[in-house]
Image: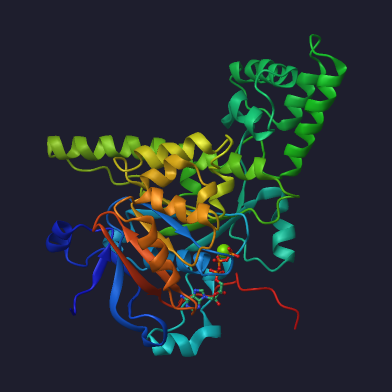
Length: 423
Ligand SMILES: Nc1ncnc2c1ncn2[C@@H]1O[C@H](COP(=O)(O)OP(=O)(O)OP(=O)(O)O)[C@@H](O)[C@H]1O
Ligand SMILES: [Mg+2]
């Protein structure tokens, strides 16, 4: 068969729309072992919202292939591209290099009749106060990211600091923050500390602990009295990389806080936009000039944003997208080495799985939970039979109700996530 497969598009949709608004991500692999060879192109649907899981062992090609999908979003024809945006939550700090052409795999690209290309519509956002440290490390920073502490509820802070909700610390934090929030004025982290210091009801111990938490929050470098607006971060025809790799220490609190704020706002904006789009349809009136773009949210190391075994400050907002993102048009891409460690509700909403080699039983079981159409043994066999070359993956597609083997295409843009080596 000489036809392309469009992953994520039903047969009816394929008949109606053909391959428009889709992106080239690889080729089918036919045969196993020595006989394995590449055949027809595999495309991915970029027209409607999806929940995509990209899984596989360390160094198997997850980030590389997520980059290939992002390239296709950036390459959409202008009429479509201007209605689409993407945000990558990048705790590892690898996506910035998509600005640079992939000269290092020029020969491989040539074999695929492709050429190296950098993407200028990919913009890098870093915590405002850490901007200098990124620049010194050679990261091409486009924007300084800052948020107002006002944007977060007491519950957000309690989760970000990993406090027990009923503890005396959480109670004191909640009381003081609620008072600040009740006041219309913007405030800084220092204002929260001052408020707590002046609190006559809390013990000195509670105050000291909370103030030290707030000192840590300040060192995250993302808070300022007046933060950015969402429209400064999510823009049509742009991939916004939120590079959180240089945040001090193992600070998932700040990564999750940032993710929750952007995710929540994107959802809200799209719900409003969807209503306007519907209204325009019903009334036959002109659509508003500037409608908030259909947005793709990409989570690297997703098991830290929506873990299966505990609640983080970003859990609820990401789950909302997984469960209710379809209607307003928000897509989710979760990338993880351990699908088993990603929240069950994300897995159950997944409609496309791209999986590289996985060895743990629990992780295979998690994939099986996504698509029960296939018996676990069959899934295991597909994964075991994958050729051992980079980029070989299985795709499970709930829209087509199909499983097949694919080789993800080489990247046009530079991938900086390769194995570190001493040379
Ligand atoms: N489709 C592909 N074509 C060619 N090379 C590839 C392909 N996919 C991956 N590679 C190679 O494999 C390397 C590792 O890939 P990648 O960084 O995506 O791994 P990963 O699964 O994200 O690993 P980790 O879990 O450690 O983040 C890449 O630097 C690249 O050299
Ligand atoms: Mg990776």
